[in-house]
Image (cartoon, rainbow, N blue to C red; front, side, top):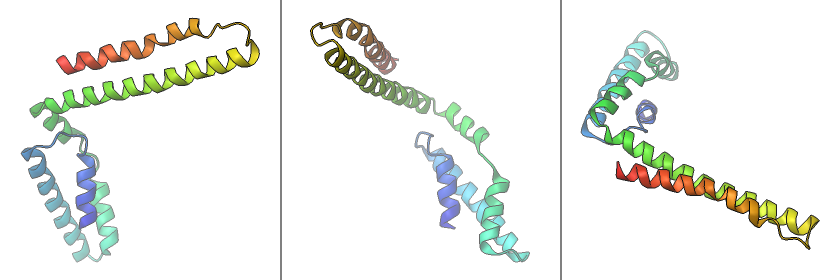
Length: 139
């Protein structure tokens, strides 16, 4: 039954931790465990019964949405996390693009330094993502 518990927990991993979430996970796990026992009683193997119970349960989008409505801080945490990821991505992406321009500049035209000009344009990307990241922290 550890597989059922792991599956149910994976369905709700993106929801902010709360007592209601834990209660819901326990209830769903108990219901699926009972379903597995019923299927085993009808002659199915335990593995087939677990698979069938999981497939018949499906996804939990409606339940997850209800939890999100009750705990809006989880949505804010997700926004903050995404803004942070966007900031890191923009920093790494900008650094790689600038390094590419430096390589092209010194490989093809070593007597003329021109990579500085596109660097200013490229640096607007992480600057904008920093602004978004700081703004999500204030709301």
